[in-house]
Length: 256
Image (cartoon, rainbow, N blue to C red; front, side, top):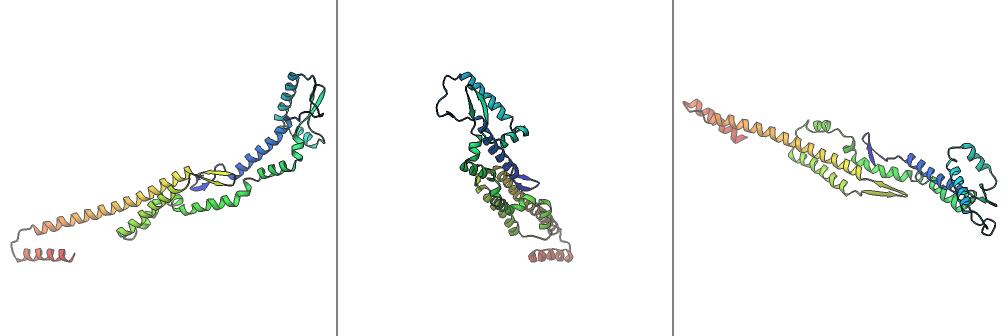
């Protein structure tokens, strides 16, 4: 799993995976063109030249490698009513290609391979849907959401709720398995876990810094107010007016 444009996706995607599986299935089937049945006449060949036999096999393997790139050769092989043949001293060897193609069990296996990933489409989409729970981490804009959050005065408890929310998300993400298996696919989740954990920590830090900034501003305001009050209380008393001013400051302190 990877993040692309703030969306959780498979890499490679499902279509690429299925194409790869299809190519592998075809390669397995095509490889049978270079595999020959032994003792096709019911007995072992007599007095054959091992070097000539190996040379014949090598020529056949080279021809098999060219099959995929040559449509003419492929069509000719598919339209043929008999097995592929190559010259062999005193005999002609037949490949296993058509025999495998006619085998029902083998055909079933190849069909299962060609639909191995496509058949898991619904399960994989359901698996991806669980990450919609983390949309805030994937698509949210921290600056905008913090600005909206701070538009109205918030209590310390409200800040604490937000910080705990992202701390809980961090623990949930960490508890996710590193790999998840669906059918024939083993999904590596280490990258998505690292990304989500980093985002959760960034959100938690952002709310913590916002709280620190608010507390620092309030502390500055309180310090400034205390300095003003202290200055008023330290004035020398010359008459009743000064006494009245001091009493007013003390009365205000009691009210606050």
